[in-house]
Length: 367
Length: 126
Image (cartoon, rainbow over all chains, first blue to last red; front, side, top):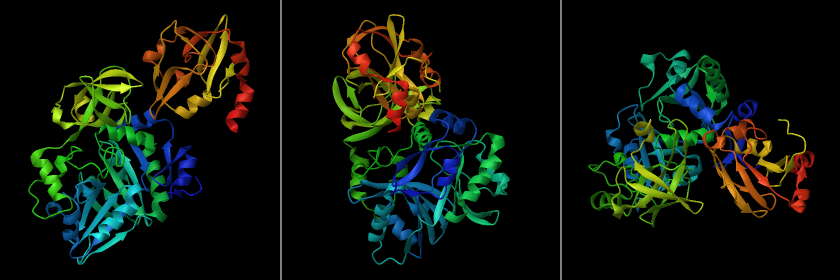
């Protein structure tokens, strides 16, 4: 693990007895007390996550909007001041280079939060799309660190740092403010399906904020949450994981992300032809949600069968601790026109287990 | 965690513990610690015979599925049915309530090749 990066919170994780694993070139906590325990803490109370490994880019200048319009299918012209939107960086074929959140800081300044494993790839790609546009693209990933506070008491904790309820950003918004004279971005976004915040601050100040949140949060039974529970939480919430559920060989339409691809966007963007054609004519494969009927756990790469034929593969799967179920998502052959309630089989260790297609997010429809 | 006296451990982190004429089979406290929350145990049918090294079942944590290897030629004579609804017993009590199956074996050669707990501790520290 010598060549791996450490986040500025590494020593705090060690103090909290975290089990450390390599992830996206970084030494990250996979769990502290246990994945199920941590998962439930977020669903029932509040959890704190170190997400400093993620990337922060600033796009600034009079052509910021023009650049962003070129690189994502989302219509950034409709994004209001201080709002956030989920989108994808697409290549010329409509394949997903990364998924990200874009925050509008002002008319000529945007913050992009990207996946840790894709920072360099994304940055080079965005720069290669700059052409003659008057825009500055800055990779600030080493200057900033990020903490996520997720769960129903997260707003209380933010309130007690001095940001009253009225002054907190609303859902899918961001606010530049100060906590104890430290400059922070407070965004009301996350990767768990719960109400929550992501707090972005300079790497020098992040340890202070981490301990402050833990201290305030102690009366709400706050727990530090590792990557293990981050994965089970996002799966229940039906959120995709880059590199596993989506990659350059999947488009947003194949990944059932149609809700993030407006049909009426005027501007051209990378992959627009391929994506528009898929919207109109359909796709060969489609991401679906799966709930096991038999008692068995579906996992990454397990085959999906229908009427005795292989029709696809699981991309993410596992136990859903808050749903008392085993769930998965995966791509299936779209020509079979699957719909909710259809019965399929998952091949696990050479045996076939019964499952059904369900709507996502699982958390909303199965809870 | 205190392992019971007389325990025999495999390099693949299963244990055998003699109880009357049969052996209790489970996974060691070290394996439990490494796997984390156990959420599912797939066990063979009673009466199945396995050779040493064959896969007799699977234990699944939140993170991954791991195979259970037969430590000696023998026959499954009982399975721990309480694990079907309470797989977490393996976490809480790997040597007592969290045993997985009971095995009948006369495979002295394989039994002699297993490690005593102290030697196993040295093995996992390597």
